[in-house]
Amino acid sequence: MEKRNWKRTFFTIQSGQAISLITSSALQMALIFYLTEKTNSSMTLALATLVGFLPQGVLGLFIGGWIDRHSRKRIMIGADLFIAAVSALLAVISAFLDPPVWVVLVILFLRSIGSAFHTPSINAVTPLIVPTDKLAKCTGYIQSLQSVSSIVSPALGALLYAQCTLIEIIALDVVGAFIASIAVMLVKIPNIDVANIPQSEGVLAGAKEAYRILAQQKGLLTLLWMGALYMFAYMPINALFPLISMNHFGGTTWHVAMSESVFAAGMLLGGIVLGVWGGFQRKTTTVLLSIAVMGIALLIAGILPASGFIAFVVCCAIMGFSAPFYGVQTAIYQEMVRPEYLGRVFSLSLSTMSLAMPLGLIAAGCFADMTGVETWFAISGIFIAGIAVVGAVLPSIKELYGGTKKDK
Image 1: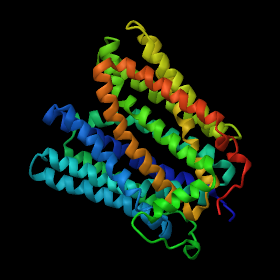
Image 2: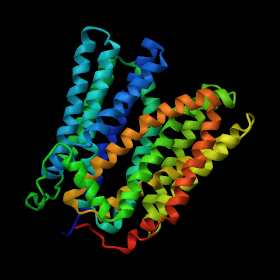
Image 3: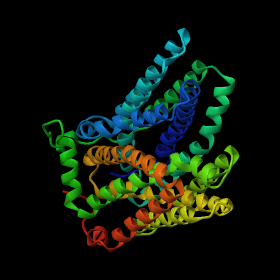
Image 4: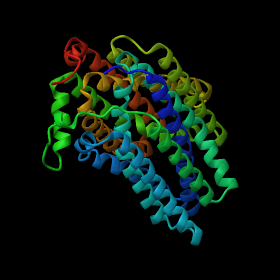
């Protein structure tokens, strides 16, 4: 399939997604502020995090085959419009009363269902429109857009929450979702020949098929489990940034904002570098080096004395810079798995990582309370660096680019 004008198609889709991501993240942040103001309960915030991940973790085991058998373009549009409709429902409720906590949690749960369909679909669409040798660079562009959202959305969410009603913030998110849908409508996305796709049976058939496909090249299966272990250790770090900045380094909310802003700026720079450079020719080297640098920076951050906040900020910049390069794992799947199976593979990957994240949050919360948050940073760093070392010596990872490019 010749991919002409791929840049126009790719950037049209991603521009719409970037707008939707910023407005959606701003609403998500506003809802967190709302829950914090209404309950002042860390348990409620933890529950909000859980309901945001759980649907993606569970549904990913079931919907991959369905995504592969249907138009990914229509699924992306439908998922965006479903999320917009859920947000609009919250706006209607907010017009008559302050939404109870349980209503907000249900809304977050339903929005996550939409994301469970949307995320695998857009990852599966990219190799249909982007040349294989440009996939890693496009991953860098996507990471850059996500980094911009990470920088802009918290401040935008706080500003909107202070200046606007919840209904107005929701209206902005709905507009963002419509823009993303229109962007997808405007481009031509090649269809997959459904006749070539096996019609698997059973509720877990798609996940089993994805696992079988990855197992054909053991390096891909190894990357899946490495990713789950990485997310288990890495994701709690985001939640613990405020605690290490304030409790260990004795900082204020200003110090928290500085560390998170520097991390996000590092992500933006890393995404730009990846977009220009594209990473090493062996994409597994890029992924493993990203994991190793993240682990070392976390270890250093965890052993710093209480007076070492400036060094901690430098570590945050290094962590942020390394993060986008891990996203090259997506390009590896896109390059080595046939397009008609990518929905299943990305659904399984999303499910595995989404289920690992809350487990990591629970483990980190218990451990950090007992030993101190800085100790968790150090142990996570050792664990994550260990993943990179083990991955570098595993034959399945070494041989990944020595085999065939696509599974059979």
